[in-house]
Image 1 (cartoon, chains in turn orange, red):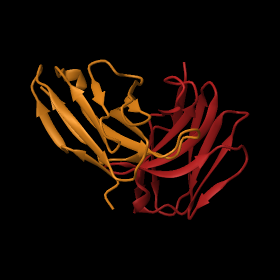
Image 2 (cartoon, chains in turn green, purple):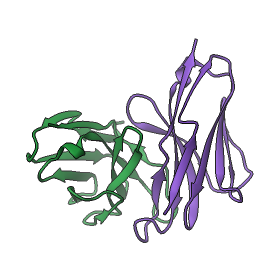
Image 3 (tube, one colour):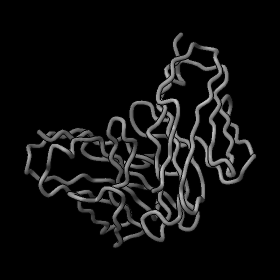
Length: 114
Length: 115
């Protein structure tokens, strides 16, 4: 019963490097989300997807790109990492359309950019 | 600008105490308010509230929403050390991010329960 799985769990990047964070869910959920969590800032939405092949910007999308080629996977890319992107990244999914259902979160990816 | 404000930001109590966590919000086109508990990793869902005055309960936890005064409270009775966590409040606002309602999170309340 995996739920939402994020890989990797930890990563250290140098400024300017690129990487992709992978999120996979096995609950057949339509909606998927990427959040970042910083001390004193709460959870902030980066990008989200309402179904396979769709993506949309959230509150803090700059410096990130996403893709949803398969329903179960949602990828978050950093093309040129910056120290300001040091954060804990959470992926989440939910089932519903009209009325937002509770989010199911992954365990997070801790990213440090030096 | 839509916002969700939680108070207090942190709280230290002893086992057996009762605590009340607060969440106030200002959003356009409110749809629902949710509470999550976050221990070391992923936030886990506690309650979803959509109607005023109807209490949701789960064991020692309960929550209620006041849509007129725009706030919600989360009560925990007879606290235990296992209740130590960050409690997150989130509000679904229909117009945020476009046609799809998305969650706006508060900064959380860090609860520490001492033995």
